[in-house]
Length: 134
Image 1: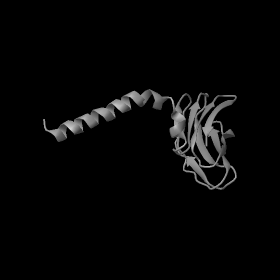
Image 2: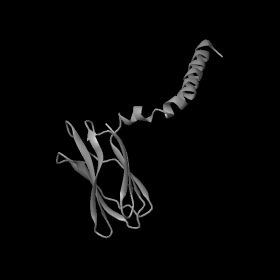
Image 3: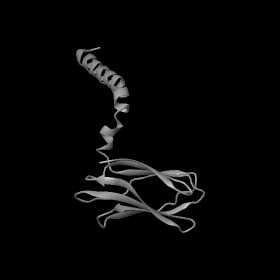
Image 4: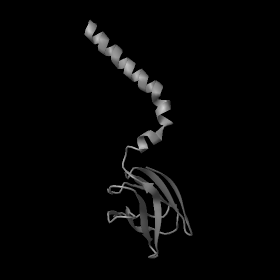
């Protein structure tokens, strides 16, 4: 083995060891990466009804995005809406179920950069929200 191959092998081993050693720390810091990615909302449909339409948008603006696939009862879907704006605002999610009932939920109460994530659990009579947006 020549000197160059030995150096490259040692460098690769060092990088792999660093990633392996740092992985537990990286796994406990998901918010670090959550700030840098586009806003996502995970919808858990725990109701007895299918969600037939989903619209997301900026509360104080006219930008909105429609999720064209339905969400059957008992299923979970992750949506990354195509939203953009400048300034401060809130993100809403409006959904209609198979009974034609429409409800609107603020899935991000405050954002400046349309980033972060929220989890919305829809049940027959109510919904629960966990938000972590920036």
